Image (cartoon, rainbow over all chains, first blue to last red; front, top):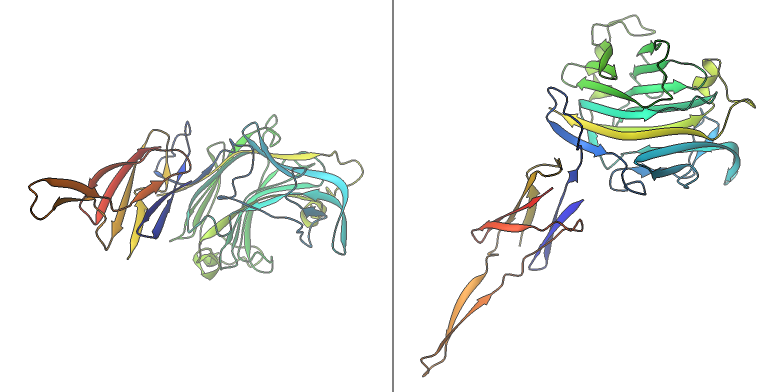
Length: 273
Length: 78
């Protein structure tokens, strides 16, 4: 939302957001810098870019902005993976899905990010909420899931290209807990020190710092507050179908995979101190 | 002319007071003028509006709280 002032032919605009009602502020995080609880009937274009007819080499789907793949209703954002043949230019794939980001709309350097979401159990569906540097190579995976496995994977990469160091954590939920239900995931990052913390349902799952040993280097991860993390980070919400992670986890998409596969998001919030 | 508009916060909870500060390097405040014709004792006072408009597509009403001619403070409710 915005308010516009006009005088003597000049115009000035100030943007604002109203949100967060009913959501308590976490201790130590007094300022909400981004909030979307998807209460409208369309994706808020002031907050999100919805990619259209794009794809990555490490997935089997094409991302579109069609309502068949991305829609808002019942106070939820749904990213829907579909088994369908779809062609863009000379590229034809057998699956479609969706990908939203906040590039150019919201980024911050350090802080806390939250999502309340439910991920699909479809074998080979690869849902994620992740952060990337606006102008640097670092990547923070607040959560990733691979349908067919119960795990939530939380990783920080020195390079989004996967060719440098990383620190990963594979949280294996207790029986009865499933990411197919709505749960809250949070990530905190002290950009000054490189300290990072991942939470699920407000419980700390893993903390990382520059003294942890990176993989594969086995050296202290001093890169956590190095150049790869020296810029503000934007948000990414996407559901890939098939590709590198499901394949490496032994859960490739195949004829047994059930579609549509829905990644449902109740809200996304970012905070600063 | 330079005109700026700034809110006190980027994000509000419903019910919060929102404060908008408008700053101009030229006079914005409405001015009262007394007009008196030569040979006529009658005097007419009129007001020249500076033509400042505040619009908000959300429908919020913005109310001016102070205006010194260069800096105007408006408030509304989130």
